Length: 190
Ligand code: 5GP
Image (cartoon, rainbow, N blue to C red; front, side, top):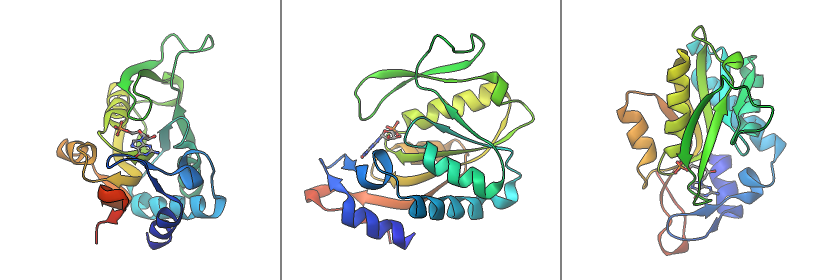
């Protein structure tokens, strides 16, 4: 997605050879037009797959997942990151390490909003080692729903996550692939 690559080059800040700060478009500020365009792109990729719900993890995935769900005309469900007093005791829960926070968090999804009749499209902002995605994939599998695919805005293809998910036989599509952040510069595939 060329418009996204352009924005990443304009606004991305290379923090290290592993981490790219994308606060200007994904993790702090949201550009509604760009976000709707990303949603259209994911919807185009998965339109024939009979998606019944789009699932993401709070918080940075929500805007893109919303745009995708809007385009597909289905509900968006976002997994929550920790137990709240209002959490459903029967919720599906997985413990995952957080790449950027360096801590472990619990992600929860209520069985009320996912069932074995669902065909799920999982959308997220960035994939690095794939821990967040693996946690969500486990939750979807435990629910009995079918995972039709995973849509990721930024795949850092020099890290292991996306490859590992694909090796599980899961369809993973990304809008841009970053092959390296070495030397402070952002290299895209193609
Ligand atoms: P993973 O679980 O795949 O290792 O990391 C995924 C999550 O960590 C993403 O949802 C994203 O929020 C955060 N993350 C991983 N790598 C980066 C990065 O380079 N930049 C930013 N801003 N977030 C990242």
